[in-house]
Length: 312
Image (cartoon, helix red, strand yellow):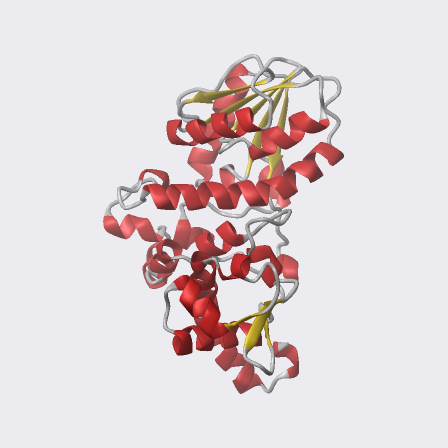
């Protein structure tokens, strides 16, 4: 760990951290973990399966072995560690899409413009004249699919926590505003058999949500509705959920989303805002890491508990 290293070496590791993230993206894209699902394989064999240059692939694999993703054997074979297992697509809670999203080209390109963000307070995409990252003309269908899959994988973990922590039994209809491909709603409905649900998001996301809802056998209890949450949200819900939505927007637009929810909520309706709430002081703990990404990727911010309690 960096805490046990001489400060110059620790600093060097920080400066070269992008070597790891770019390598992680590549092995995720190539599907290396799935190729190792049945056990160790030699790098030459992996290179043949992925149509890559064996010596170059070996260097990438060895770099990731140093980071604890793979194990390198004496005979040149590689196997998966507990971390590497989550790059597989056939395990519970897979994180391959997450690795491809956050270590991928689109987000890496945004971080190149960090100085612009720091000098102006604007997200990186504004440098190209884009006002909404979700409507970026450079955002491809592949980008959309990767984003959707990554959010779905992360949301499956969240849905278990939400269904366990909150009592939905008094309610009949739940509306997930900005619900993506429906992963959170699917988890909540499976844990609460008397509930019905509405997933609400942009049209492209709702196409994928309908597929997921159908695959999980919930079409009779769940509907996917497309729209714009700055204009309106579906009425009639007993509970409205905003999971990792308002942190994508500045205060003005976040408040606009909350107001649209309030307009259609009844006197007994509930609003669940599911967000990371961060400490006033950041340190080197796990809870304190990763809080600088907002301004590069979008216009929002991570908010502290007082800021949320004053607006919700």
